[in-house]
Length: 334
Ligand SMILES: Cc1cc2nc3c(=O)[nH]c(=O)nc-3n(C[C@H](O)[C@H](O)[C@H](O)COP(=O)(O)OP(=O)(O)OC[C@H]3O[C@@H](n4cnc5c(N)ncnc54)[C@H](O)[C@@H]3O)c2cc1C
Image (cartoon, rainbow, N blue to C red; front, top):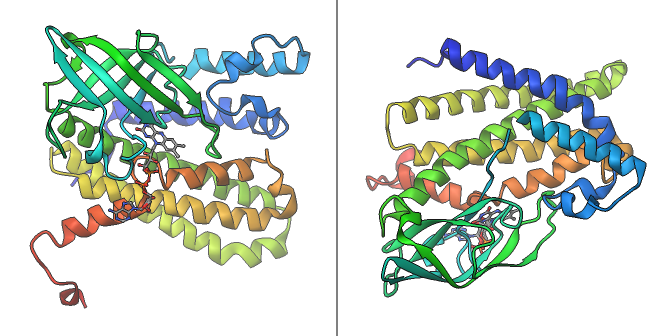
């Protein structure tokens, strides 16, 4: 097994690290005191008409950042529904063939950015199918007739997912991604990749939170001593997570089945981020509990990471299913 990055990967890693260090972290104090309206995906429409000089200053920061991160096309992911979340095989949105087109009907719950993205990756099923059968993925531009954002829902995660209604939305068969009826495999492949991504992001945030803790206690030797053991334990967990992540990435590179590894990375990282941030709030005390404090914000966002892309209980289920696939009894492990 070789976990070393190639020179090209290492260059990319350095570019990302420099961007976060030089462009994002210096903005933390600004946003700790910033107005709430910049939280969430609809900030542009909310601030459009504002002449307030302070707000215009934040707009300039956000727009400058957007030009740097590139984002020419943005997408939303439409899988969850009112009656199908943790178990997406229950999805009910239908795609009824009609000549060279499909007619989409149904409701998607919580697709993030569906109100501001350029297009949505939508999962719907062929009529008369159930479970994993007949699921098909479509790429549908926002604004297509029959694509309606019923409402956007402000969450503690700092995003504003939507309720998205499809009413006789006609799409051409060329908008099918992959093969008709093969959307389940696509959705599982994406969820696997996205679980790695959520885990890796949570990993980076957990490290950042520990840096904030370090800055908080840097000039307080008593506090530093008091918290050193717990920081050390978290650092150990972060290293374990790094190994878990590299192992999963290596297996993915070998084209192995990494559903269980993706679940492991997501579960471990998001639960760790939650505990690290909870600890950091304890160290930071009352000032860190201000709603816009970077730690308070991270804490709110961290909670949602344990639900999106499949809740923690589902990740545990995937891991145990893999472990006991060959029928091993739980007692054999003792
Ligand atoms: C901020 C945010 C952003 C989101 N963005 C998107 C998005 O972009 N696209 C999208 O498609 N969806 C999105 N979602 C939806 C998200 O994927 C679902 O909320 C999630 O899959 C859980 O579905 P549910 O809320 O319907 O929970 P339910 O399915 O009702 O489950 C509730 C709880 O029951 C437990 N549970 C359920 N089934 C089992 C089981 N078999 N075994 C053990 N425990 C179980 C779990 O703890 C689970 O949390 C988003 C959600 C949030 C909060």
